[in-house]
Amino acid sequence: RRLPRSARKSILSGSGTVQDTLRIAVREERHSHSVTRTATFNSLAGQRRVFFEISGDILPPLLQVHDFAVLSALIVAMRDGRPIHVEGPVTEALIRGLEEFQEAWAQWRTRYTPVRITADQIVPVETPSTRRGMFAFSGGVDGTFALLRHHKARAGLRTARPVGAMLVHGFDIPLGEQHAFDRARANVADVIGALGLPLTVVRTNWRSEASM
Image (cartoon, rainbow, N blue to C red; front, side):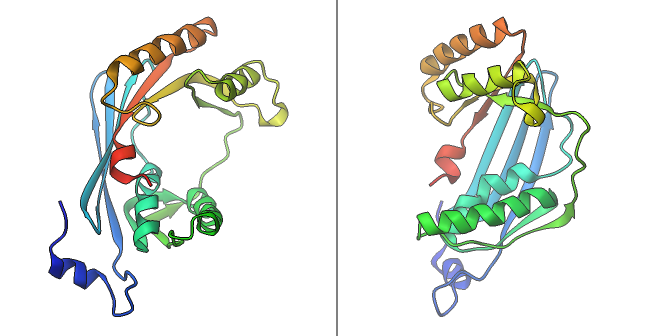
């Protein structure tokens, strides 16, 4: 739903630039076989709620930092020209990286404006002694190359041991196309099964709620 005209006027200054802060609230719901993380915020077009439903053999640990929320709202904030504030902790490394990303993106897409990112708490991230992680994988050439390269430890010091693969429903394949996603999931399961890796599925409405 759209904000009332009076509210929209209060958001804009006399020069037409947005002055108020886009505040993001975060929620996590945990069940025995799934985790749902939600970021809720107000855009100029009204309230937005972006969810990520995670299910599968590997689930994320308890939510400690709210980095995903910044990524959920960043494109909307840049388009509206509104600084971001996250109600919770965010890592310093993410903010540093997104400052550089925004500068580059605004050069390519001039309708977007770099915005300031703040949080209730900004925390450092310790570098683990061993590198490992979940690999985003949809069965394409690039993803297959990356997964095999790291699985076989052929990336030198950059090698990150795969602990599983993650397939997202709601990015390339819209949420409404369940049959197409089921086919993609079966193909992915065959590949990662041959490597002895588990599969995690993420469902999200980010594409419809907060993308370009």
